Image (cartoon, rainbow, N blue to C red; front, top):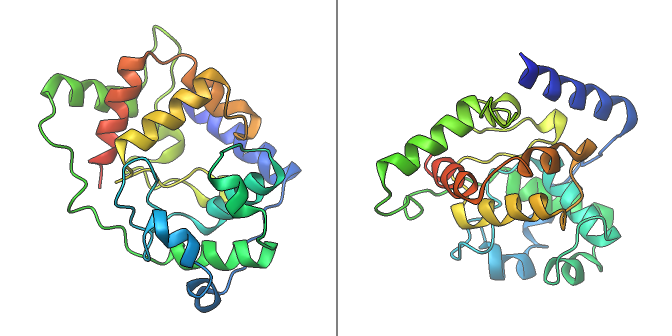
Length: 207
């Protein structure tokens, strides 16, 4: 129950205190992604696990990230200069385009992964860890990791494990600070590196 309260409180607080607007034009967005496509692919399916898949990601979430790369709220040496020349409409259009693309998972299934690693990842994702006070990931991101666009909780299913693990570690070290109400930082700091790697691998195969 506590996990549900954490997510519910975050959602209510967000809806009351913040408004993220992303009314994008997908056709316009398709014409604006040439630079994005170099790393993220023309349809949002990255060919490098360092760069995230954007296909199918919620429009509102991608828009927020682009806005925060530009403002400096989220720091990244590659993405900040990419976001700087974009207008809010550009960001909305790009986000709308990628939201409608299909995530291709055929080549992203993890190779040989020990069962105990998958088992640990599933346990963390679905139940958390009561001994450390770690909430279940699915309490906010949903049973299938589809996320929640209204709360700006991203789609996670099928995302590269390397990218997910890297983001959890930046939240844990507080080098990434653009999570609403510090929710992800509070969660990640409770996770061991083993748990981070396991849940990231589990999420990658969750589709």
